[in-house]
Image: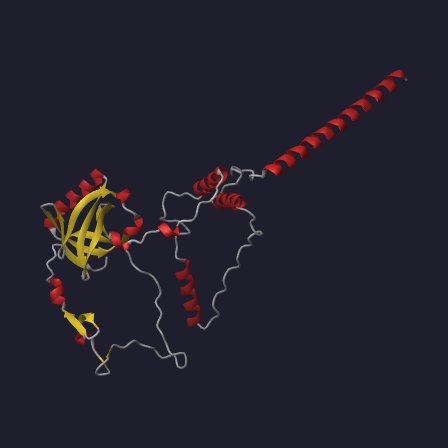
Length: 316
């Protein structure tokens, strides 16, 4: 496990639970350096003093807020640590809500909360079991990195997790992005639901598609170039099978493809006839009626001819 990023306590009414906060996720992204194309030398960012025109060390750099163009207010780390906030050293639980009531767009990075010492064991387990039994999540406030934040506490695998959350005014409204009113047939919606069901799975964990193919390909590229080899070629793209002419065709083909990928034959796929215009339906009905009438006449003629032939044979 990584080193704790913060230590303090959970404030649960009058109950205090000393805890350490550890990152629950890790970043596996490959990072690049900038370099000079002409001689391959590293290009570095230097922190320069505008007045003295020289590079300054980390020890010479402080925090400040620009009140006006010519006025900078210095803020020290000691002053930030001494801010009169009850959440500066505690994760203060404010309320308990159903987890499903939290909009996922508000949920950010996740952290594991570890009990700090033997004194924390009993109240930690108490809170965990209370959250499990009530099927609730705790909404809390805490102060990290120079700002107070909203947080969400939930239970996973016998451990309490803390998620940083966005405040109400930090979530933009999507009102203007909603599409205008469109006409959809029930058959199209049913086929879309069928596609969802054919692609449904119980969990993301262990799925073949839940892998970072970009990073893997990037590692192969770096390894090849480091050994002086040609970069690996990209796999040929699958043929699209022609342009899809309508939404229903796209849905039906998607269902068959999803079922085939899961080992199904695709025979159970629901295929709906495309809705036709009234004029087209009438023309098709007339055409079908005409075909039936012609077939009936032909059958009648054949039957009459067969009867005449049989009569002649009997007379002979």
